[in-house]
Length: 261
Ligand code: WAQ
Ligand code: MG
Image (cartoon, rainbow, N blue to C red; front, side, top):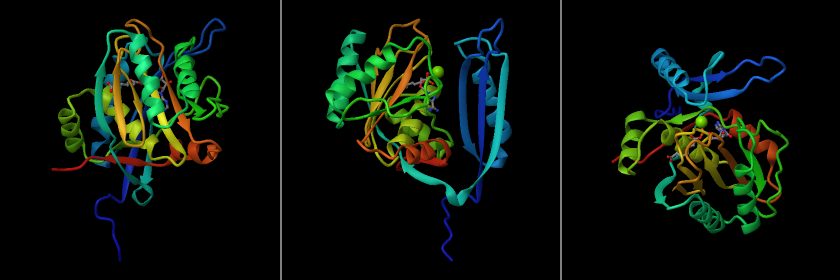
């Protein structure tokens, strides 16, 4: 019998989400979310770490914190390679955005769609929970998830220490990069995906990135410090199968692997 030795029989998806409650007719606000895919003996530690992060999140104080833990069948988990990392620094936001547009064009996105993507994030009046899906050719938004957007979930790195060394070797570190590379690597493995554009909603973090099926190119500064609006745009091939994409984004468990030396 062909047994897959590299993957466990099952893993647990641990997800945490912090929000403010609505009051005086005002709607509650999503503050932060984070998640991991771990074995049962790591659940307690991971819950503690995620809780620490959520409690120290800079976008506001949470009224409600939700923790959800789901068992995932190991046989359904896909291993995907980590994107190759590059980092570029610019003097101004305008120059970084200019490079983002040029990079997206290099990755196969039309200039119209690339410009539209940057403008869409720049003009948001509040951060979304997820990202927007744009046709890479026309620049038209094709998902109908409104201000929520589409979210990726059920992903982590395959091997924590190998992944951390990969980040160190790429000259970066920290939870934000860790999570973003995992998210971008999963997204890049989606059928009909072409590229991604992102910058953080964290007011203290001005690095963003563009990604292709191979590259994760960090760009800074993508916004002014103190700006607490960020976002994500996923560019997809014309006539993309949106249902398939959303199903993969939300439900497919993925572990991102790095080459081990
Ligand atoms: N799925 C889809 N979109 C998401 C998700 C998700 N799971 N999580 C966040 N977003 C969207 C949402 O619109 C957020 O407002 C926006 O992305 C930014 O989220 O140094 O920290 O968690 O290499 O603030 C990138 C650079 C950091 C890291 C990105 O994003 C680096 C970051 P944040
Ligand atoms: Mg954030």
